[in-house]
Length: 171
Image (cartoon, helix red, strand yellow):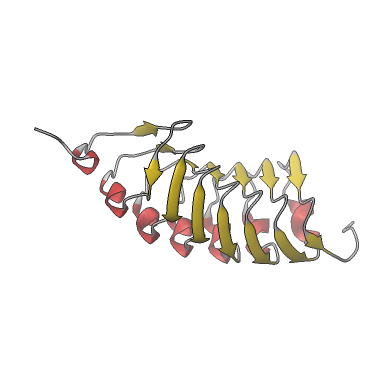
């Protein structure tokens, strides 16, 4: 008898990075209410990030880097209030970075490099007081560097190279 993954109600961690997985992320993954760690990076996963991802309230780490994900970063990502690490780099994500990202108060690292988001860095990022690393390299972000970035006193790595950032350096 085969058991589907969503029936593993006690599952807390999924480490399936660096394989040859294909297909899309099933929305039924959100049935894993105890899931704290989801690592699917460096696979061949396609499609969009399910909107339902925001239902994984226990999630602290989400690594979906280096796949072939498309679409935008779901607004529901802002519901992952226990999230400390968010890695969505090297996909084909478009649209703007959701302003709800400022609700991720526990976030220490944010990696969105090598995608295609547009617009400016959301103002709400200044609310992420625990943020230590932010890497937004190689995107299509525009606007200026927020003056309030200086309020992120835990920030050790801030990288925005190869974007369309303009203006002057904030004090």
